[in-house]
Length: 233
Length: 225
Image (cartoon, rainbow over the protein chains, first blue to last red):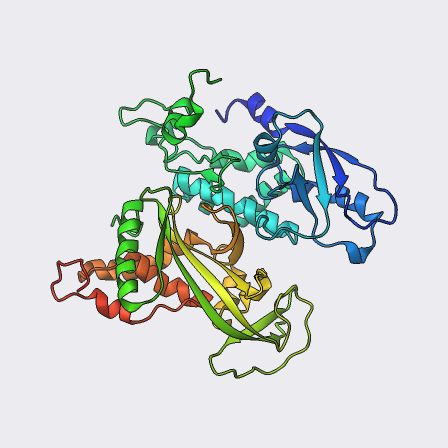
């Protein structure tokens, strides 16, 4: 899988055209225009919206500005989910561009994590990478990497550099078939209509008889409700 | 118990054992089940009285409001007013509600401690306030290592912001104690043992009586009393 560069590039360069509008209740000195941006699916909202912040700050006074947060049709958007996941979860059936409302006050601290700096995003991203490797390789690959390798992974994401990112990520995607491949497949099934944000359980890539499992097998076991008679699988 | 990892069934048994002891000791733990399955977590709520206090820490980029936990109302020495983002203002006295959850991480085969704290008015504590509940001895070494630090995370079952102690080092610090116990041999409750290490770091007390109850008269028995 990690050899199919075209697929990897398509996933990496996926974009969602988005329209950012300022919340009507924000205190502004003049009317704010909407701001349009192509959001990378694989990145995080708070990592790629500096320009959005700058744009709206132009019409606001500093004392009216608190931590920025985003909302779609009344739902606060969790910045720590990849943008593509947020769109697919909340807005996949709506017309493009994706309309997101920007807020600078009344931060919903029962729904959203705070994001005071990009180092928080980096820590969160690296934590996910490490957890995934704990499942794939018992953390051996990620622990063998040097600090500068971890940094390169993060910088690749932050600066949208496919080659820089994958130079490091390919080590994490090594699938030693002689040893049964990944120990477990890191996956999360996100669901919008539930308190429980996602389903994450142990799942082996290969059956005891040695047959490779498919995505359908995983869904059948972890989320059978997804497989209906007219399922688009 | 396979090595120093804990599987989900073992986690469940350890929790049930801890629950029985907690009921006996009136320590306040409860089990919150997920949809009537065996999946769930341990939960405990604690009220504590704190006096907000300021201290300057040169090594840190952000100053922290230090608090002391008192039953007798001794105030600490006053420091300079800091500009950290804190809910608790200097010199003020508060009763805080701390809520602790123990969940199982299948990725790390270990228990994980999640917690959050509120003032009685219902305002959530920020990360800076929470650091102040960590004993200064722990604070320094925790903050320097991001993977053992306290971070804000989404609760995997409730979907709400909690603070979490990262579990990836758990196997590392559990190993020496578990190996010794296996050699003796003596029965160990993994979750209780783990809690007695990580709990005090974030202000969660684990009374010694849990341990004295754990040693039954017969070595093969796993039931308390």
